[in-house]
Image (tube, rainbow, N blue to C red; front, top):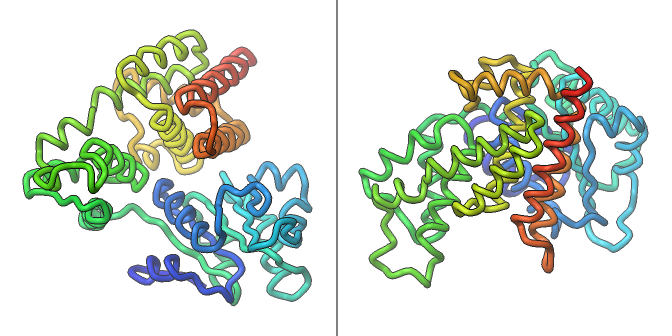
Length: 351
């Protein structure tokens, strides 16, 4: 089956439990990730539980053709529902998933877990969409770039949940900051909420977001600083990455912000490799100047497999940050940054 339009939000908020698999795909990688995360939270008690949640990439499935079927057939050791999350970087990487779903629909294999598949912009004639869309036990969910009206409505709803609202001038200023990608929108909204403070702590007079709040919380300079940090790492400049991260931390940058910036860069590089530079630019990749030149070099440097492994490392860093008693987010973010910088340096040395 295929979800469309306004139907999507409802079908993800209260998923049909007669279904087994969901394919969430599209050019807006931030929206893909957000919808997949939201769906995961409705299907299992703890989406970060390593015992009941298995994460696979197309490289994992290529290295072990039985990885998906084994994970789907495994019973929970600790009780409760199980979930398999598969992320694919290329159309071809989804072939094992398509084969599994065909066998499952035909009654040739079992499924003891839910399956969420995250992918980029898939062709209508590709294997995954041709398998998911007619399937009785699966749902395909497209994630195309949202309109300005969609994104500002999303921002209004997110702020309302925290007891906040825009004034007219602030709303008009905020829209250009979030156009084009749900991941960017979520990041900017989170920063704004953090800046205003939690509900019940701030003064009632602070419940309205003003233009001054937007300008203060957007922290364009801080975002640019993190972009430069990630640029150096993904280009293999190990010492420069370490030094620039130290400067960014001194300026107030957070480890969570760094990891999110890294994840967004990985998504942009993947999009550039699969859909071309124009597709990446539509999602926010730099268009001109030194930043654009650095981005092009990174596209050439990082293979699909390396990006897949980088994505997994970033997800693991984010998961560790959420654990009670974990190392400080800034330390975990810095470790991830250096790991990627060293990997890029090694790859550039082989060219």
